[in-house]
Image 1 (cartoon, rainbow, N blue to C red):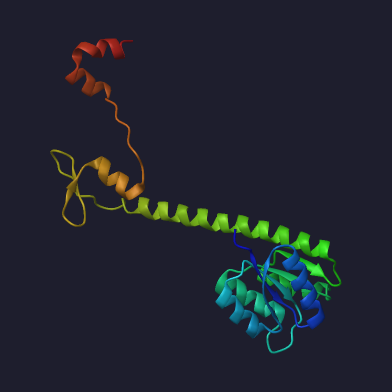
Image 2 (tube, rainbow, N blue to C red):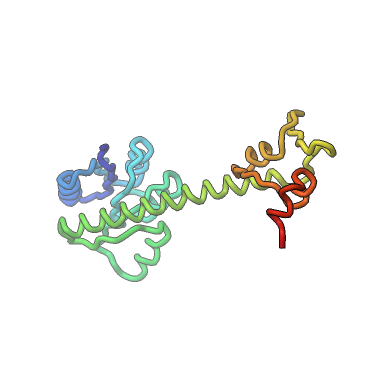
Length: 204
């Protein structure tokens, strides 16, 4: 099984090295570490990590918060913040990237492990939710195809598709909705086609 890729964005060299070693000991593949936002975005585009550990305060023109928002919007990569600044104003700004967690410095390996495992679990659940939403939207789009005028034969009840081919109602509906059919026979048709069974089946 491939190791989960985690992007580390931390501009303090010793801290970045400690995080990298801890993550590798846990069995993850570390991307980076990156010391600034531009490098983080370039690495994310190249390696497509499943999670980023992001220092809020970075050197360079882009803050950790701005970089986290870019990671989310461009690559759908979730973030766990690493920060020594846990004041209310900073946290309010940090929420814009919808992070999966916070680690307040200094933290130990157990704190890191717990934060990463919980974040990966949340990320997996979110990915499943997005896939379910996509499938539901596809189903709705298919159902919407049946709205409007449908050309149907007045005699045999076959339907003409947009390429001019005629097909059964069952085939047309199944093709455009994914629905399956079971067949039975209504009381009226039973009485007309099988009168000898009608009284037995539909007697009062």
